[in-house]
Length: 192
Image (cartoon, rainbow, N blue to C red):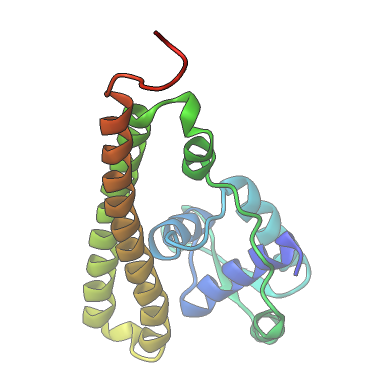
């Protein structure tokens, strides 16, 4: 599935829950799908325009004369279901932390430890956001039909965050051992 089709899937999916402006769409994707998906304004507006040209979304005039809202059409729902039925695109991994740790011998254990501590803090914050999202979904009666499916993704986010915390704890223990051995005087390396 090409990137543009995945953007269409995210946008049509969000609009299938409720009509919204382009800005609100971006905020919802960031706040609700953010633990596994992102779209920039630069992606959202061209995709919205394309979806509107194809008759998959329609502009709904705003009552307060601000931005127009977009709503999904019946054809948009059909297209969304087609897109959702396609196999997902495998992500191209780009993890700056892992890149730095892989070449960690250039940084040393102390600098790597700081990187892992930051990653652990981020995972703890992500876990807190997932727990808040779980509560919000449970309390939002308007999401009754979608809630069990949304909670599947929240659960995945919780599991990922817990796994990241467990990995960070293990990595910190390994780095502590490296720090201890690197602070000992060198022996047997050909020095008198």
